[in-house]
Length: 383
Image 1: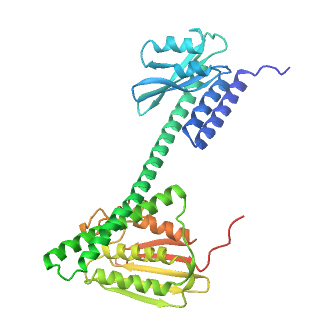
Image 2 (image 1 turned 60 degrees about the vertical axis):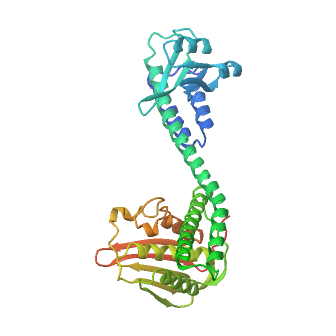
Image 3 (image 1 turned 90 degrees about the horizontal axis):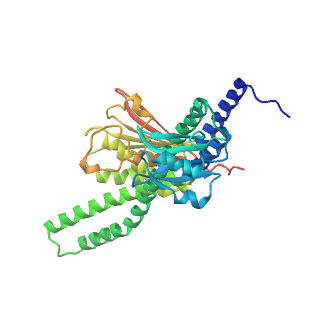
């Protein structure tokens, strides 16, 4: 029979178990998993056969969200306010005497959000050590629960954005179709034509926003935006997009320089989206009267796209953040070019979906250059 652990050895073992708990809670992917791990490890750490974790609901009542060693029916029935009678009722739930009961709060942002309680196997004269262990576990659980709640809230929000954006595409397409049809009528007067053109412009902007939101949710929830590769000439796509952008901004100069062969297997529409977003960004953040320079170069291994503007430099501390969602390099907002702040985030993910890279260089007196590098063909699938 193994000899009992010495106090120092037992404390070391408890520290190791707490470390293991912390690691397990860090990798937990759902609220239910966090709850289960917490009560199971509480029973293990305190060497007991009964443990319970309760959280407050919207009415402020505590309800059992996970238990160890308790009858399921009794745990499900437990609904109690957080008041002075709670301890007595918890002792009844755990079938623990006052000397064997131990409970600690879960605290988030200074607010008590739950209780973690156990029934100790035997009364102890001084339970400071057991209370410290249970409090340490409760603190870890509170952090993990809050993180999981925020993750699930964010995922729900992003799914909702995707669903709503998808459903908005139909009405916006109908508006665009109707506006285009009205503009083709010969009898329309100039005043009405201007009104319809404003409606058409607003609907096109809304359509771009919806496309960005759908791409955003796909990138966030799906991990990668899907692309459909087929043989194409990137030179031709860049020229076409640059011409369209120049027509939309008649007062601006967009210079295009192209070298080498740029045939490869890419998604035509997605790369047109990349080029359009980067040129639009360059026009938006550079002064009137300055050119936007677009350069494409083909080598045997890859294609390089560079878009340069002479706008104010992006601060060094901001350059690592501009590819994050809802982030802008400048706080200025042009009402003619309103967006949801997802352009560069989506560009990054479209480039990533092509197994490419994107980087930015921005210096005083030199301007800002975004450089995209794309392999000509998709890499072989991993094992």
